[in-house]
Figure 1: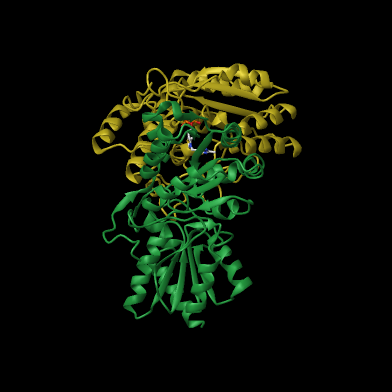
Figure 2: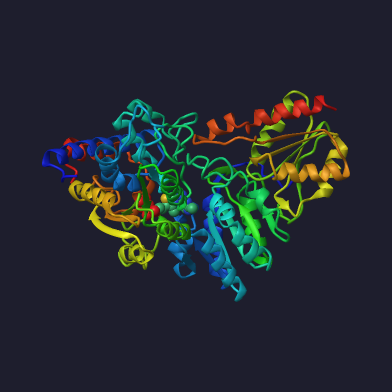
Amino acid sequence: MSQMTTSPQFVSMRDVFGDKLLELSKRDPRVFALDGDLANSTKLDKVAENNESKFLQMGIAEQNMLGVAAGLASVGLQPWVCSFAAFIVKRAFDQIVVSIAQPKMNVKMIGAYSGLLNGCTGKTHQSLEDLAIMRTQPGMVVLAPADSVELRQMMEYANQYDGPVYIRVARDSYPDLFDEQSYRFQVGKGVTLVSGTDVTIISTGTQTSRCLEAVELLKQEGISAELLHLPSVKPLDAEAIIASARKTGVVVTAEEHSIYGGLSSSVAEVLVENFPVPMERIGVQDRNSESGSNSALLNKYGLTAEHVAEKARKVIARK
Amino acid sequence: MEHLTNENVEKLKVLAAEIRRNVVKTVYHAGAGHLGGPMSAIDILTALYFEVMTIDHDNPAWEERDRFVLSKGHSAIALYSTLAERGYFPKEELHTFDEIDSRLQAHPDMNLLPGLDMSTGSLGQGISAAVGMALGAKLKQQSFRTYCMIGDGESQEGQVWEAADIAVKYNLDNLTVILDYNHLQQYGWKGTEGRTREIPVFSPSSRWGAFGFHVISIDGHDFKQIVKALRDAQRISGKPTIIVAHTVKGKGVNYMENNYLWHSKIPTDQELALALTELQGGNVQ
Ligand SMILES: Cc1ncc(C[n+]2csc(CCOP(=O)(O)OP(=O)(O)O)c2C)c(N)n1
């Protein structure tokens, strides 16, 4: 808990991503940024404008872009491919499988504008399946940061690690939860943000900040919730999941993703195989989404702190 | 099949100006959406929906209607504004653009709004669906035509060329593809004068010609040329037609024209007023 900051500030995730990649591109001669004509949205333009020779425009052609990245990696470079998560993950998935994941290429894939909140672009541009899809690949590291401190550390990790990494990045600003000095992101490890005894809430990515609010709501009702943040969807911290479920006896999962195939499925697999407990899931249900403001979307698709708290009460009643 | 009269041209200009005004107002109101690409496409959409296509706005699902696919789906607001002007739905509904529970989604959703023949938004996919529609018309021996608008940036998607191959293979002379050739995309390639006209190694006429399309090049803001090209395409037999329409991104509003930043930028109050003044009275050309 000492890893958390005491004065949370809202920080733009995409700006932090752009700044950090610029830093990596200046420091590491292997690092190149590949764009699919979205640099001014994803903030890859920070590299284009400040370190131009490290910026490669690939055009609106995601399948080719991932293939080119594989080729760059095969000759010892470290390409960072960045586009909207919807387009790199879904549109170029066969290229990711055959050219990147199977040969274990050192390619970093950044899924920008991930999840539900996309600045009113609607369902074609949302990515509610990226975690599910990417985790099917053997050896793929799949990460979802809760805040900008964690994002920077993940990018540092990805730069050091030799192999394919997918990081889902949010478009908007989020409160910084972690303390820059004391927090250390570790791949495959969960972080217990709040300890509790009545219910375990397990979340990933930007949903974690909404879960933190839910924990507060529950506390006011005298419910002691434990919040386990899993920044690493793959590899997954099975030990932490089992230990917390053993302690509280019930689990709620929460993610800005479809309820199918992502964090909730990953957690359910671990629990069913090791320590089955009642479980409820927060995420976009089996339905298509639409355009709208952040708050309207979160409300309609059931991702607010209040929704999380409601599921927590519900799962406790199932004890 | 005659040429447009000057009177008809004037009528289309007035309509296009009104459609442009509604696009700018809607994007301003929504605080989201695209402007450059929609403005670039409006004269062609106006010609299609008010002069060329065989459609019935009271019966949008009429089986024999001509089909239109906006493959560059981010320009949805241009299509919505055109459909509203044509009477498919009340213009006041434009105010719901991009909002939750709206039929006017950021990218076209055919299951929500009658009058949309295909859902699009991920670039490159619409043209394949248009090929399917034209092929379907042949297989079912129906006489409707299919029109499809694509972007020049969008043409970087390999899928566009996969679709082109099939269109030629099946002799789809009932398909007209219109390229909105405005020389700009979202961020694109940096050139000597900034990001102005930098779509690389792309000579659309020779490329589409090499794929076996009948190619017509026009000024995409000249109604006489637009309508003539669309009608000429109807008479070509044995192969599909591409109309390479030279256009200006942001057309009609001086400060938006040829500036990639207006791909998706929201006007301030002052910019809105300026745009509406410039678009007054239909003197866009
Ligand atoms: C597959 C895919 N990749 C990226 C995008 C994001 N995007 C939307 S519009 C656009 C630029 C399109 O340029 P162009 O086709 O030339 O259209 P126009 O200039 O007429 O707006 C991009 C990259 C998308 N919608 N789909």
